[in-house]
Length: 631
Image (cartoon, rainbow, N blue to C red):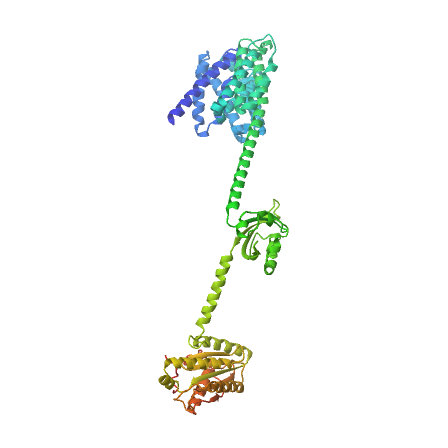
């Protein structure tokens, strides 16, 4: 990197020295009288292209080359130093003004940037050094320098106007594009053709052929842009100044009493050419940029369209575009796989008639939410397939807004969830069956003890809120242990099932509950039942079981009988549900002590202000027989 930087600085020093020599040569004036316009334009253009951190090295290298150039044409060191100071002052003023205006070399690609840069280069920058030289006229004359104001100001302004944009243009990266093989041939042909026309115009003075210069120059710029403009001005300036130096070309007709007339005329002509080609190059560059941007945008749109169409055509879900009034604009091909309809059929205005009537209100409500501006809505409904079967559809609607933000349409993603719905229904059925199994006694088919606890707590709370009556019956098979000993456990199981089914048959209200309490005991919950009603239901159950006539040798009558304890009470806040079951338990004990095969009704328990947990002390042992009971 350091070697490249050193090589660039050395090249700049050589170029600066050559600029001094060439500027003096084409001006045809004494060394001190020729304004250093070529040097100033070169250094200002390079300074604008250089980073501030490297600017000092650029100016020192250019200054050393310039001093060497002045001394090479016969200017002493003091005069060369004075000339270099004027150039440095001009560079400082121009660079500061352009930075104040936030002007960058890339601004040359716009008309506004060209105008601002030209104003600084043509007018502001050369004024201060030229006025200073004029004020020091007598002192500069002692050094052999010219202190004339107007010739120096004119030459400096025109020279900077030509050189600064030329240096910036030739430094653009797109100049290297002309060396690419596809453009190299055409670029060489155009440059050679224009060079021939410029030589024809400026290297003869018999015919005024200046008008021939502009058509090929415009062609060069129109085809090559900014690189063409830079090449055109460079070729034109080199050939014109060469012709002016030898008195050839149209410039030879210009009178040159001051020694700067022909140079000023040549530079003015180059300024006019620059004012014509650089705006044209900016327009060409802007058009190419816009054309490239438009081409890139079209390419992106085309790629996106192909990608979206690829996704929509190959997605398993149905993709649709729908207007807010319900009319579909697009349906993806997946509809044929999911529903059997073709996309064309799904675009018909009557497609909504295939929505299941029960789901149509929710379907319409989802579309109305889109119209109100809701960004996302999810909906599930049934849709009829071509084969007239129903398909469950999950629709996810996404709102599309216009440029003003108002709702315009929506995109719907439709997914077949029929299998999922079937699985959910099967799961619900299985859970219901599981819950039923968990609440049912496996032997008798009536509710089990767990279910009894849940129902008693539920009915107790309901009765407590309403102040209603609640009754409980405890049923026990008489001498059931003897029955098992005589007939075996299999017959015992059949006997328990018969008792359970007969008891359940005597329950006539839907809210009454029969449950196996444990072992050979059963319990009946009777919501909203008075003591008389509870006693009546208990007696009906006792008689129905006795009427079965199931043989039982160990029982007094020779058949299976039951003893029933009953209790009913008006539920109040001073009671606990366990007190009601305790009362029924005591009534059952009385019935068994009184000879069995009978019903005993217990009076309601007395008020107890203590809070007693539900059924804490009525847990049965493994056989389900109360420790307070006898068999």
